[in-house]
Structures are given as structure tokens and as C-alpha cells.
Image (tube, rainbow, N blue to C red; front, side):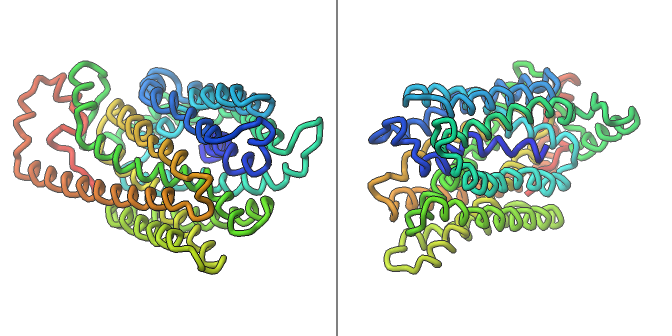
Length: 443
């Protein structure tokens, strides 16, 4: 699963972190805000189709669904490499959003059905940090592919799309045989192991289940305040993540480095971020706590943005350190917030749809990121850095509301204030998800 997530980041992101500084805009005669438009259109179907995707993955084999959408976005990436116009680029970006929708929440949904709640963070962060490292690999790969400029009459940025897209297509075919299915049907497990996997999750959830997607369960999902506060939490995380992916090499180039040097110097930024994020995840699982680690990540990230906002007259090395702080802090917080909400949702459909809502609507932060780094403001980017800093503290506020809310709810359940739900009809009681009175939230 970790290997398969590599193209999920570098395929949609290479338009910004590599292709832009290798001449994409000049070759397609783009001007004004057309580059920002090309970034934004990706999110149209990406946001709208997250929830349907995680409903379908429950009904189909995850190995079939996830490998199928990988194949689709690999083809779209190749098409981006051969397009001859801005209009063609926009169509390909919309198609990329169509196929990429559902991959991240689908993977989180699948992984969470194999591990208990305080076993999940370190596993998911290991998985997620492969995506972080893909930022490192994509920068290095772009450095190598830039030397192909002129081969076949194509500029270097076209070869970036073509070769990475073809790699994704090949990986998608292999993925069909690598991606596990649900624990209940996983072929790599014996019948006894499948039963044990299901039982462990059932015990960790205190019997909370939601296996019937009916009118009442849909109401419990879509009216759950926890999901909507986590959309706000993820908004700031997504803005930071996409902003860094879109603009880190460009920002490094603005420090006076060549395009190639900017690519190379972006590699250790992502590598260090991965190491720190995994270490934080292990500590979070070990201490059985999420909230404080989220706030620590936000504080580190904020320090970086403050330096970048005050960068005038600062040495290049200080501004480079600020890029580290922004990226490290962001990648501590982002996977933590995804797992934290998942830990507090009970049942198949509640987890699947909840993750899709969080990631789908939270990715509006990516739309914000694609508009706030205004070319005319480079390299200071006061709007970009200032907006991103503000959204980080919106995330901190929402995390605090979530933390207080679930602690209060646990106290109510300890006092028996939710025991009236035991009187519900058995079919409804067995489909309450985390609304079941035995379920306890983690923070």
C-alpha cells in the first residue's frame, strides 16, 4: 500500500513542483492566472466524488477499485504530457481529479479495518510518509528528466508527465494483485486469521457497527458534528500540504537558486519531514493521545510561516530553514488529523463516508492554496503565507473544539446519560456506529 501511494501525490503535483519551472507555461502560451486555473480545476470532481468513491469501495473489492482509479489517473497524466494547449491541460486536470478522488480516504478506510485504534497512527503515518517521500523523489526525478529536454522534440516537462504517468499505469496493473481486500474476504489470511482480524476490530469498537447504509444511518453520518468539525481541521492541513507541494521548489528558486538546484534542495525537506512525522506517530500511539501532537505540529509550522512573512533581509539559510519548519509541522499534523477522526467513528459505513467527507471538503484548502500564492508577490508571498498561517490556527481552534467535545461526550456516557439508546429496536441498536452507548472516544 505504501508503494502504491507514491503516484497519488506526484502525478497531480508535478504540474507545479516540476513542470512549471521547466517551461510548461511558456510552451502552452499560458498567461495571467491560467496556471492557477489549471491547479483549481483538479479539485472540482476530486471533491465531489470522494463520498461516492468510498461507498463503492465498500461494495466492490478494494483491490479492483483502487487499482482501477490508479490506471485512470496514470492515463490522464500521460495525456498531460502530450497536450498542445491550455484547454487540453485543463481537460486532463479535470480527468485527473475524477480518477484520483477517493484514493486517500479509501486507503485510510481499508487500513483502519485491519488495526485497532492505537495501532493505526504509526501504520498510517508510515503509509502517508511514502507520499511525503514522493515529493522528495519527484524533485530528484524531475532533476534527471530535465536532461531529456529535446528528446523526441519534447521539452523536459513533457517527459516528466509521460514517464511518471506510464509508471503509474504499470503500477496500477500490479496493484490489482498487491492491494488487500477487506479482512472478511482477504485471500492472504487463513479463515482463522480473518475471524481474528474481524474480532479484534469489533472488540476495539466496543461492538459499535454500521453495516447497513439506510436512512437512519445516513442521517447519523451526515448530521454528525464530529465529521464537520474535522472538515474545518483538515482544511488548514490541506492548504498547507498543497501549498508546499505546489510552491516549495518555486519558493526555493526565488531564493536565488537555479531550477535544478531548487529541485535538489527540496529533496531533504521532504525526507526530514517523513522521519519526524513517523516519530510523532509512534509517540502518539504509545501515549494514546492525538490532540497535543496536532498542536505541536501547528506551532512548528507557524514558526516557519512567521519567518517567511518576515523574510526581508534574512539570510538565505534562514529562509530555507523556514521551509523545513512549514513542511515538518504540516506533516506531523496532517496524518494525525485523519487518523484522529477515524478513531472516533464506528462502523464500516461511518468510517468510509466520514473519511471521504473530511478529505473531500477539506481539500477546499487546496483550492485556496492554488489562489493565494500570487506570482506578482514573489518571493515574499504575503497573501499566501499570511492566509496559510491563519488557516493553521483555524485548525488549532477546531482541534480544541473537537478535543473538548469528545471528552464531554465520554463523561456523559460514563454517567449513563446515553443508556436510553439500549431501548432502541435491536436492528437500529446494532447499526448505531459510534453513537452506541458502549463506544468511547479517544483524544
